[in-house]
Length: 197
Image (cartoon, rainbow, N blue to C red; front, side, top):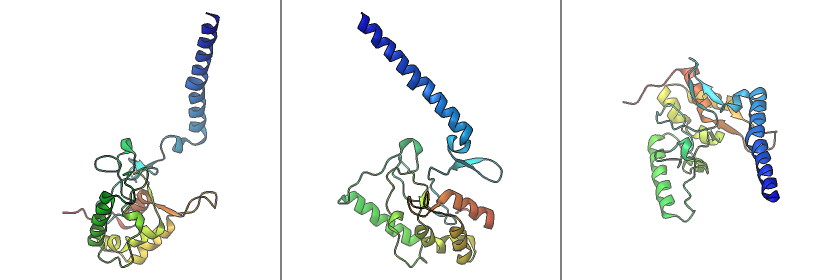
């Protein structure tokens, strides 16, 4: 009986410390020090409406917007409740077929892009929700975006360069561009593109 009481006391103390006190302290500190990040790094449009998070990719079908990496998260992709990769191995016939289809689609949607298609535009990220592209993958899409918005490609290139995020702490990771913030900057500078028929 004595051992049972000790075990129950240890369980109760552990529950209070790790299940109640620690989460409340961590949440309170993060809200006080980094409130925007603690609340999901949400991004608002010019009217103040939240339109997404800078941490979670969204799909963009309109040719006047930059497209993020492919997503295998959920049935239609970009589903934050189903974060996952495709789990296809490099020898998978399904992966080969999907990449072949995506290459054909990208070539059709981007007929003026002359450089080879960056690999990240035909492969899904591990989470399926990667909000960033390399500057090279964004630059590859310039002809389509500029044509759809009827602006000079150099103006779009300048906008991309203005939105390149450097390496974290100067040495971690690679330079990248957040697709959602880049597309918002496009709308701010050039207006919203025409919708597809």
